[in-house]
Length: 270
Image (cartoon, rainbow, N blue to C red; front, side, top):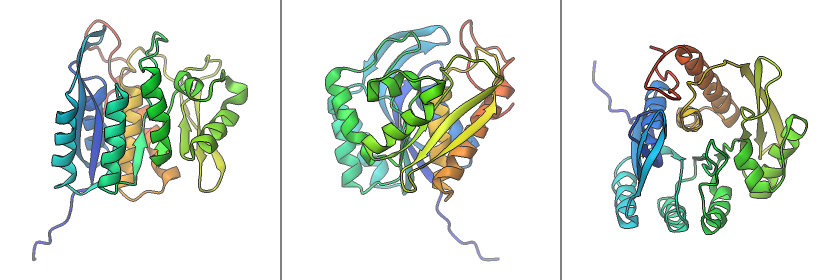
């Protein structure tokens, strides 16, 4: 039988590096690989990090970030781009311009802006640039603190759906508003998907697992959704599959031990 060349389904992740391997580029590559695509990467920041926290951050020179972007996008056929933490207005503007240059339209953006401690991770100038980038995204995946920062209001169980709609209509993009930061009164976690094209919402529910092994969950979710999009799923299907994948990875990793702090999800279910 004659061999026929076929292209890889390639997902580019643009994010920071986590030396501990739980989050950032490392979590993205694991998720993309586990969900069935080829992972390419552009590293914006190097961190000294483990399960206990971050001890140092080293931003990549902007010229080097541009060189990485050009090297990947000029050669590889990237079906989808996932964007994680962008540390400055200059980097955000560079990403914005470069995605325009290469005509990239399938974009999943995880607006990493607030630390687990509640501290803001982004300057006011960078936040303004990020808001200008959001309408380019096919989907944004904020958690509750990030969504509150974007729309300037508190979010609770009672207004979760309304907040997702407000975000989507204001920034002209589809939104997966993650409910994991809300106070838990049930054994179910609910995320709200707002679909811009149909101006409709979908509630996505999965079991809630009590575990500290959730380091990198947001990175893994956005990159898994990007992967399912690259595999030609529609947006609702890609998001539903991504949520299910991460939920299962949390379940499979809830009793695993790595380091002395908050461990990762189990990306490959090992």
